[in-house]
Length: 464
Image (tube, rainbow, N blue to C red; front, side, top):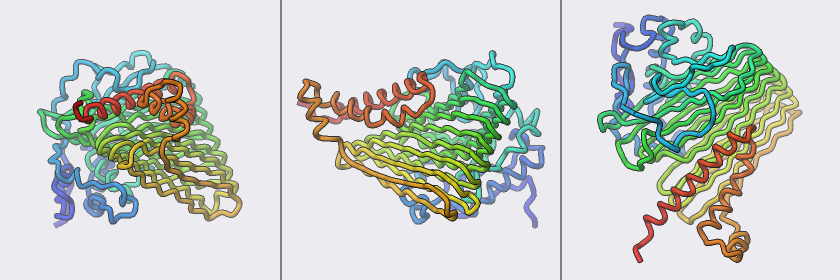
């Protein structure tokens, strides 16, 4: 008998139990459940995830990113009926500290009481996806699922199956939004149990518009221990002709958290997409970044940094897809790894045959502070055009012993000297952030990571 819209999806034994339990059966309680395209999207997501399964290290794109720890956690999916955890205030110091319009989500669901959207300027709309699916689904349908390919991103398929809520930012044609839009996304256990939530987000800038969108991914507290959380997020970004989007992300989740995220952008004629991502939290974090340069003279900057210590695994996997001529892309990523931490960078520039006169550059540098740290780096160029200028490079090394000696000779203690060199190493990539207040906000988070690493070292040192 053919499967109907009300038949629960059954995952095969190839899908491990924690993830099989996140495959959402169709329900009238879900936002937009009575809309055909929404229902079909959820069903298609379930089908694709079941077909692909959870990737293993035998899958090339996941060979450096072990998911074994996730398979042992009995995650409980957050649903539309689940109560929101009581959070009297945003965790102090965890999110970016900036003057902005603030939209808060807890476990992927909008928290209006903690949001501040009373003074939005003309031309800007910031909404909850769940609300739009119930009231204005036609405003979402043209954009949904166009960029994050659920057929090649298994966790994007799982996200699509569990479609529940997320943020939607829309900037009208020609609107210049001066004040940033800050999306604060909080992961919190429910009733002391491990939880999983799957935000689905959308950013649309119409022709000639300009805006800055910030994201802070944080926990309900900065405590390193506690029930595990899984954040599986997908964000699709459409930048129309001559529009300019600055999109900056802080991943500062607690050590009990796991994060899998995909950000997919399409950049049209003469438009600019400027991205910066700082990863410093979570036990395991993977961020898939994909940007399609789809129109002439499109420009994309994918920059970022990561910093990890202990048993953290931080992965950045990116694809710059040059699908039109006369486009420019630049990507610079830097990482700092201490103790037994592992960093992964997989960056690919694809130049299609039509994309003549492409200028694409990629650089990755890693700083290993201890012998137990590890970095796996795989830069790639795949070029089908013959009139291009492309480059890539990757280096990994230790702190400069001469510079360290110089600072020590000036009376600076060893830990402070190391901290100064680390921050100097990351400075040039942070300097690529356009606005000074935002540069300072990210620099403050790097300094916070330094303090936490020093505290961890002190706690691990044997007593005198």
